[in-house]
Length: 541
Image (cartoon, rainbow, N blue to C red; front, side):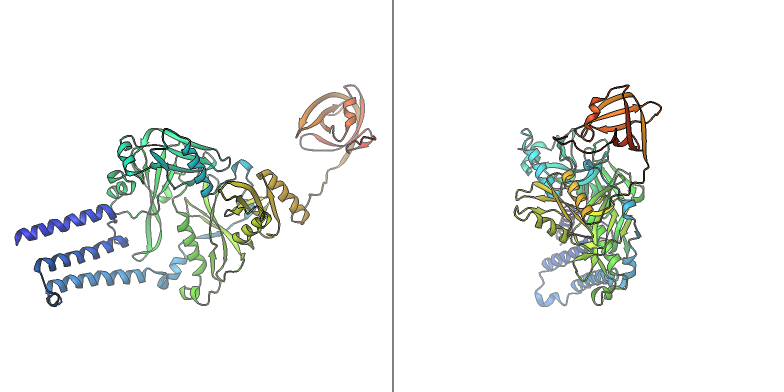
């Protein structure tokens, strides 16, 4: 009997250790996994006791030991259920609504116009295609490794990029390569579409595809047994060193409710060294302390629970919710989650949109009514319906002070073929182009035609000057020849286009001319030369 108890105890401990090693529950009362673990453990003890005693079904119910164990099980279940209820929005609507602090933003001030080489042109699916193609060209690696599906979007040296580590192609490939680790990661410039396989001096030995103690989740659990980790992301610092960014959940409401992020653990993917920071003290190069899904959920709490939980289900007065999807914006070297905001009634228009910082949780709302993202996508697809291109989820841009959806249009192979710009407030204004610059030019022209954008009134004074040419030089601007002249008695520089004033080629230094001009910042704009107004020269002339 003593041997049986000893073996039973050892067996239970062994099963507990195996379960812990595989499931990796946090030893923390806020972790639902720990409660499940305790429930399973109690039932396991009951099963072993019944087997040892060989109790028939009729005696199991009358056994005091079994009753005590089942009472313990019931208490755990009841505490868990009560804790779940008291942690839910049903009884804590105001607390949930206050988890996120939202400020009103000014669109043209907060979102600057981006140059074309800073606009992320690719979505995650397109980046995956480019990454797999790059991997396929690496003959020395493709048989042993694959590209992981992570593709985190970050800012790297002021450029929007997606990064993803390689992973072992199979367990056998792990056995043969684990000594040296994973030798590289993929980095894709989202603006230029340049794809690089960045090779490391020393391989990454702590990844999601590693096994046993080098698996990143197990490595973190053994170092931080009480931490409840949120979604991990893969990033690189400004020197290109790969890290795992591991946010630690903080529960603000009851046992299981109001999850945000309290701390951030950085794990070097090569060495396994870790650094633990309070979220507000995390290094600025980190871009993804808060996952996009968590931030969107927090804003949904903020928008829908203003008048309590039951109003969000029944009356739905003043209830707002995020639209079905999100994208990322790079602002001031941080990554912000962008999503539209609409009423819960599910109409086809947005009441505004929201930007949430993935590092600081700073949130700004912009009250700009307009089309939903899905409506803008449909408008863009309608312009190329004969080609059957599919629109990606829009990116919100500032084009000449106008909130504009920027959309990539892809073919059946997932490759970007065209680009579209759709005005948020007037989504019937849709511009299509083969390049971003062509699309932007067409969009600007449409804004002029529809009165959204007007030409600024020219208030510069017209002046006239007659004098000798003291200096003349030639240059080329946008493929057109220009002459730059200076006149006696004046320090001004006059810009004369050959297209407008063909006669300028007849003049040399010392010749006298009369120019009518308006003052400009760099070179004065000539309106007439020797009495001849600007205009292309015809063959008859």
